[in-house]
Length: 387
Image 1 (cartoon, rainbow, N blue to C red):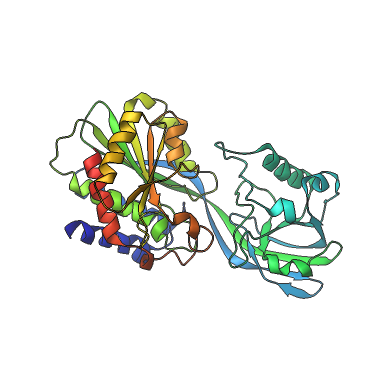
Image 2 (image 1 turned 135 degrees about the vertical axis):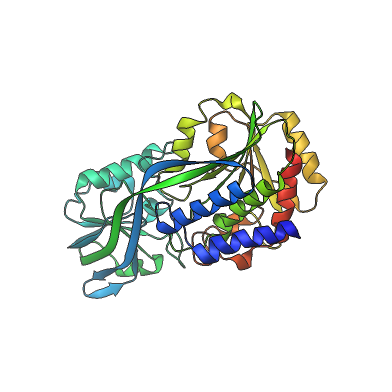
């Protein structure tokens, strides 16, 4: 029960006392200070790896079409605006290539609103088609861009990019019948971009020549308590650090709390990649924890660039504990940072987490009521046995 009590304390501080922790915000800085003190209290050496970022905030927006108000919201990291112009609907990439959009408010819909467009600075996966869409919009001189939300129930952005130089807002699919080319539109977005600083937290236990990395991300999207995404992962690693006290281990255990996984350009990951992952031979393996602890769901693990021996050993350990299952590899998450660099990686999440992406994660619904701390305690023990 002692492990569970510690986990519950960490969750309460992160989700209830601090709350939403967007990269660069004061709350994010408070979360960083909290985990630093907790790692130090557990006897670990602690380092903050600082980097530049943006503290973005928004106060809503209004969209009026031919005198009728349409429900809208600023896209994350959007520039502010107060513009009026002709609305033009663009349905395909070919149409975007040939349509004059200078001075107009452009609505991306149908094929152009089928999936999120990768930020300009995202290096891990950025299709040429995405790059072309963004470039055509910026070079074309549009006053503003509207995108159709990927969810009909809550705003899920197509464009989420602090380097995009056109104001951008979202509308719901249900409002599309009210929007057509040639109408007069007025868009006002109350947003702010402020220069800020944030930090990864690196803590170390032991002095072995090689190391096992344990990672999770500490930041959230704006407006969410971030219980599953990813206070549960942070709480697990803090509890694990406390359990290491006095143990003799053959490896150094490195804890990395990334700051920026839910930020458009992953600045914390990029800082860590440049400073540490240039020597992947230093690592035995890396565990990344994200989205764990969903009530009624198993802990789901997957392997990336791992040897047969490592996979067999961890699978045998998981099979001897209740509530674990192996799933197919999935591309999103900080585990790809390690596998991309040639470090064997193990991602741990919840078996039902992908069903919650559009309805719960990144929203105010991602609260502590979703979490079973007994599951998190089991994960702490699994990670302890793994090292």
